[in-house]
Image (cartoon, rainbow, N blue to C red; front, side, top):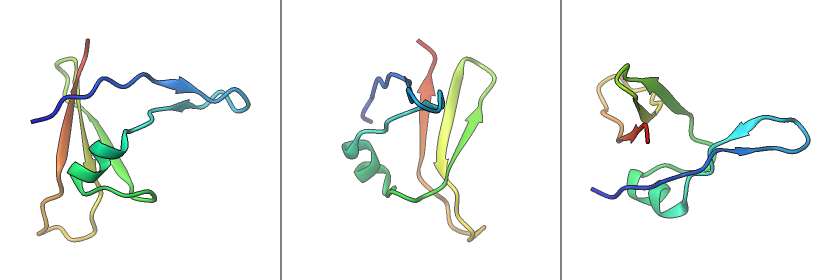
Amino acid sequence: MNKWTITVEEDPETKDLILPLPADMLNQMGWDFGDIIVWEDLGNGSFSLSKKTDDVNKEAPTSVINKQ
């Protein structure tokens, strides 16, 4: 399992927070630009990211982000 450390960035114009996911992570997870990613707080200082799918029978790849 790969591990990434990603720094949250702020858009200087809108002040929106951005989590720039690296291309190698997107490739490994099978995610692409335009996909909807679900952010879930696991309640223990870590978070789960998974691609939203319309097919309830299809399991989407999940990535866990641990609080540092």
